[in-house]
Length: 291
Image (cartoon, rainbow, N blue to C red; front, side, top):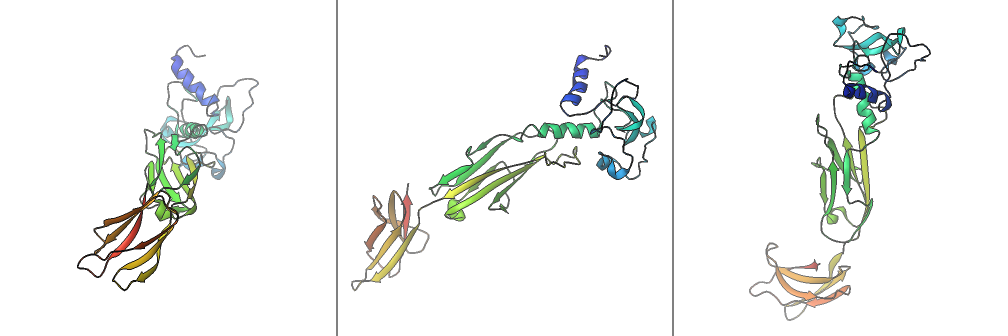
């Protein structure tokens, strides 16, 4: 243990080992140590085979000259895992090589991937159950308790039955059961961390999804068998599976509705004979469910 550095910095360095699988980037020999391929150390010199190739600019020479003039770029610097030659590290200097230095871009990327391998981007979801039975005309609501990173906000996408919901990019979604229709539907939410600190995510750790199976069974009503009576009245039948009670309403302009009658309890059929509105030979009728 180096006595000249604060314990906190040593702990951060060591966390790179046990938490993110990073290896030491020292060049001085350590007898008996066997180097291995790691996120921040490699023997490969072919640009297309280097684990951190996404961070290397096309103009950076490989291997990269091992001097301070290249200290600001990610490249292929010889000396890592207690080997002076034959093994390479991503940056001229990094916390995995020198205490007091920050993690380089490659090590930081690996730490972020390691975090997402252990946690999800939300603390909780609503509804908690992944299977929902819905029999009300009230909206179905979904919500994520997101854990927002400081560096960049999470990207959210909602889908119903595999199709994206336009304009739905926040942690909450409200759906009309009547718009979905009776039957079984799938609601999904996809959350992604778009941080520029991660350029490669082969295992998809920065993406998470949650899905719900929603069974919609809302009441269905229809007016059938209208009949014009000799005295100017209409007779018709309301059929359906409303549950609770029904209110029959009338309108002469489809904007203002007047309650005519209430049927409770609902038995699945209502035979109704109307009274014509005064001064009008035309009227519209509808049956409305009551909670």
